[in-house]
Each structure stands twice: as structure tokens, then as C-alpha cells.
Amino acid sequence: MSDRPFPGRRSVLRGSLAASAALTLPAGLGAAPAFARSGRPQAGWGVQAGDVTTDSGLVWVRSDRPARMIVETSATESFRNPRRWHGPLLGYGTDFTGTTRLRGLPSGEQIHYRVLLADPDDPRRTGEPVTGTFRTAPAKRRQGVRFVWSGDLAGQGWGINESIGGYRIFDAMAKADPDFFLCSGDNIYADGPIAATATLPDGSVYRSLTTEEKSHVAISLDDYRGNFRYNLLDPALRRFNAQVPNIIQWDDHEVRNNWYPGEVIGTGTPYPAGTRLDDLALRSRQAFSEYFPVSTISGRPDGRIYRAVHHGPLLDVFVLDMRTYRNANSPDDQTTDPVGILGREQLEWLKRELAKSRAVWKVIANDMPLGLVVPDPVEGKPDFEAVAQGDPGAPLGRELQIAELLRFIKHRRITGTVWLTADVHHTSAQHYDPSRAAFKDFEPFWEFVSGPLNAGAFPANALDGTFGPDRVFVKAPTTSNVSPAEGYQFFGEVDIDGGSGELTVRLREYDGTVLFTRTLQPGRVGQ
Image 1 (cartoon, one colour):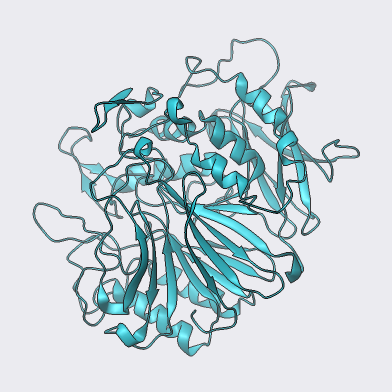
Image 2: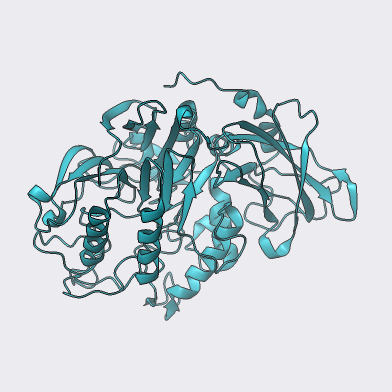
């Protein structure tokens, strides 16, 4: 899958795997760490890096008890003459997780790091170090950039199935040797309990690891924390985290299916009557901030998720939040819509950031697709969840905000925009062109869809003609909720050549098989 070398990545994982081996299912899953144990602090949940730039990055860890986080970095695996970073004290308030920001790193280099956890009362007592590695973004264009993206993990009741290799797709993504992984949301399914067994259409049984927090919908803060911990039980994900940094966004299932601000739900089962989704979202955002290294959150549950991650001269990634600031789901046919799916403040931020970007490519990470119709039927009403509502005419509802953005990109002559998304549990490529569209004041562009990582797969969604999409490629099942054991799990890969500046997208299956390839040329308005 890759002709790029793996400079020490495989051996650098030994420390992470050794620590992970101590993580056994019966011991305190979803519960507070076992403080009665003697010995030194341990980091059995592995390490993660996130939001890596040319000279900085974030490193994450979780302890099994109160501890001081210490990070050491080096240019080599031997850790000769390491640089030391003193991180936060890990305790009850953050579920014993912590993130340390590394600054002043060399650009375009492999950074080896190890995390030590020190006893707060005796700093000389440290646990076994857990190691990881990442590449900083290049300062020079010629080095090129490669990354992978997908979304939707442990959805529709399909959990970690050891008999099929668990979250096996992460091993395939690691083989591409990417500079980072863009996760397009639905990192957890807080509203999706996981049972130990489920019968498949052929009569075989899908067997999932289970935990207390995954036996019911998430309501409390501890429930949400347990959902994020659940995924870290998977060895393939922990291996991946130790060698590939993340750029993480969220979508609806981090809280509840199709949620929007101000929504009130519940009839007593499974959610209490009068449950405010804003309250659940606050708890989920806190757990999200504790379990992922995200630069704009910085450990604060009220921190924003949308942000721009600058990855050298070839690439800027604009990470959107199409969940927190949206208006209510509705028939979406209003002729004015000042809030839309982004909210006015985020839309204006995106315009400013796109206009000032000098990167060759501007990837817009939209956690929901633009031209695919995603319904949200409520008591027979034709409500809609994403941007499109199936009316192929002039923009209505949330489409008005997207039309405004597309018009801005055209008239400001912004080049190299590409849209990447997940959410709909199949993979496809759509080309949008004003010659086919009802709204014509924009330049052509591409939107690529991937996922799920490990969740139910679903048939392809209908297209909305407002922005003139042509579905050039699609792979999706013909029935709903196809299990990961039956295939239809996908990720995408983006490869930007440092010499020509060409951007190549490959849509891949869970084992790395290439399904579709498209190469785009740099320097064009839109794309």
C-alpha cells in the first residue's frame, strides 16, 4: 500500500503494546482506576497525538491512578538526550486523562515520544514509559503529505469483535503510513448499546466485547467517559494511535442520533422524560475533551471544536462543527435561514480562514455531506438532518448557507477546495458542477465520502440536485445495517505530491483494497 519507509514506527510501538497487554477486560472497565493497587502509575490505555503542525503537537494519556504526566521527545528511538515536557496532574476531575502541548519541534521530522506517569507524592516513582511517534508537518512543499480519513465507530450495536480482528481497519490505515488521521465524527455511539451477541442473516453470531457503560444509552458524564474508553479496549486502535496523530471532529452520535441544540426528548425509556439534549451535549463535550487531544478545547468542556489545522505549505484542514450551532431539524424549506447548519459565527470564521489560507489545498472537513439527502423523520413529518432536503430547485433552508459559502469561494478566487465527509455509512465520490445545478454561482468541486470504520453499513442516500452533484462512484450495500463482519467498511486516503502539487484521493475498503481513484490538479478555483 505504501512505498514510504516506516522510520522506526513498528519497533517504537513495543512500549505501547507492553503497556496495553496489562489491560484486561474484567478489571475496572468503565470504572474509576483501582487506587488500592500497589506499585507505580500505569498507562494501559495507550497514547495519542493530535493536531500536529510544523512545530507543535498534543500528546494524550490516561493513568490508572493520580499521576503527574511527563513527556520526553527525541529524534531517535534510543531517546539519547531527550527533551522533557512537564504535563498536568491527572486526577478525578479529568477521569485521569491529560494532554501536554509540545512546542518548538523541528518541521518535517519524525518525533519519537514517551510518556511517563510519576507518583505525585514521589516524582522518582514512575511507571513503565509508553511510547509513540508522529511526523511534524513539512515546512517545505517538496516533502508531500499523505493522510487518511473515515468515521463512525462501534455503531448500530456492532462492537469490538475479536474473532474478525477487532477494529481491523486501523491496521490497514496504518499500512498507508499517513501523516495523520482525520476522523469525521461519530467517534462513539453514545445512544447505541452493545450486546454480547447478535445473530447475522446467515445464522452466524457476531460477538462483541461489552462493558457496563455500553449496556445502555449514555446519560451521565461517567457514561460518556465509558463510551470513549470502550474503543480503547481494541489493540488495533491503540497501535494506530501510537503511530498516527489524529485530527478529530464530532457529529451526532457523540450525544444522540440527529440531535440539535435546544432539543428536548424522552418518554421515560430509554431517556428520562424531558431530557435536554443541551445537557447531554455538555457532558459529552467534557468527555470528548478529556479523551482526545484537540487544540481548541484545551481541556475545557465549553471549548469549540471547529478549527483550522495548518499542515505546511501544501495543506490546511478546516475542521467544521455542523452539530453545535445548527438550527432545529425541520422540513428545511424556508426561504431565509440566518442560522443554517454552521451558525453565523462559524460561517464567517470559515470565510476568513479560507480567504487568508495560502496552502495549495484547502480540505474542508464537513461532518455531514452537502448534496446527499439525510432524512430525520419525526412523527411522520418530513424533517431533514443534513443540508439537502430533496428539492432540486433553488437553495432553501440550510442550503442557503452553503450557497453563500460556495459563492464566496468563487468570487474570492479561492483555489484547491476539497470536501471530505463520512456520516452516511457508505463510500462515494460526488462532483458538483453549476452546469447541472439550480444554483449556478459557484465553481465545480468534489466531495468524497468514506466510512464506516466499524458500524452498520447502509444503502446510498438519494442526491439533491440544487448544487448539481454527479455521483461518479459509490459502493454501498442494498440492505440496511450490514455488520462489519460482512464487509462494507471503508476509509479514504489523500496523497498530495510535493513536486507537482497534485492531490490524489483513493477510496479503500477495510483491508486496504483500492475501490476508486481520482487525481485533482492544483491552482483551480473551487476544484
